[in-house]
Amino acid sequence: MTTLTTKLTLTTNYPRKPRNFLHIFMASLLSFSLLSLFLFLSLSSSATLKINHQPPTKQEQKQISKPPSFATTTPPGILQACKATRLQDTCVSSLSNANVPQNPTPLQIIQSAISVSDTNLKTAQSMVKSILESSAGNIDRTAAAKNCMEVLNNSQYRITRSAGDALPRGKIKDARAWMSAALLYQYDCSNALKYANDTSLTNQTMSFLDTLMSFSSNALSMIVSYDAYGNDTKSWGPPKTERDGVWELGSGGDLGSELRGGIPSNLTPDVTVCKNGSDNGCYKTVQEAVNTAPDNEWGRRYVISIREGVYDEIVRVPLEKKNVVFLGDGMGKTVITGSLSAGQPGISTYNSATVGRGGPLDLAGC
Image 1: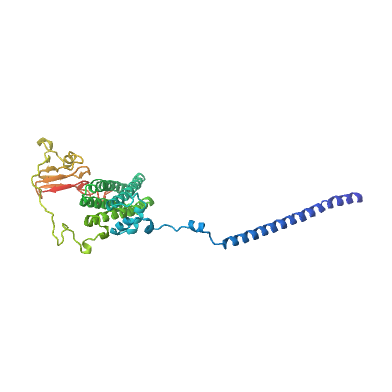
Image 2: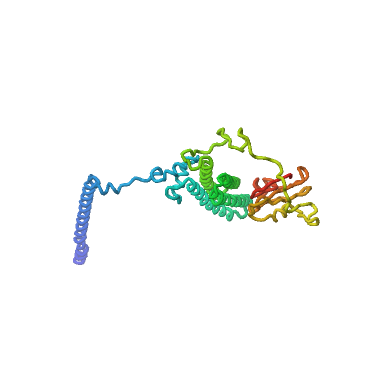
């Protein structure tokens, strides 16, 4: 028993020597690693300090550049033209990123400003379309988005007329009128969404519309200055209105007005509306007569004679129906009435009108 116990004791104690040796070896290895790391960091730090204290070479100095600013990168013509706007920083930044020709003329700058508005209008239309597609089951938001789509389409048409028709033909006042209408339609869209602003997408769209209106406002301001001073951009400045004590000819101020009222003479009816309807060779409703007007015809008026009577209907004159004239039998005799009012489900002030128009419309004797 004693011998067996001794053997067990020897067998148990024998592995302890290699284990102690292993501990010593690992400790030495760890110390060596830490020492190597310390020496490496010390050398790296010294090298870094040495490099940082060396001044840059001439070649390196040439490679150092300052960030560009509008004052140094924007053509002087754009800087001068943007002084005609109330939002000069927005004007300069938008035109600096636009496709403006080198050494542009004032008219080319205006065209570029209108192009910026047109490009952003397309983005706004896409955003409103997304609102409409996501508004199923929400009557008020659906109605607001539809109204918004309609007025933005009208704005698109006016911008196209201003840039593609009026300005190239030198019709500056026409360009002013078209661009002013385009801006107003954009405001109408934002105003429509204001009453259905219950989603983040609607809120984002309204914010973007504010940006769009700033671009359109800048383009309109430059057209106003161009109308007043032509190519003399040094005389351009932010537009002034009657609030500033400035009255333009024909605006009803002290300079008088060239506007003349009354029923235009020599109006020959193209179609007639009467209560008896087609039995007398006339249309029974005003809307039926409106639908017969030709599309996009600017050369003449299209006269609709509306005989005495009360016409209980809602009339819409589409944008493509130009120069439509309603000629009635007199006040209190020819009456068009309807029953829409804001507050009804899906009805806003915009689409509550009894007679609504998208294109030019004259009312004579109604």
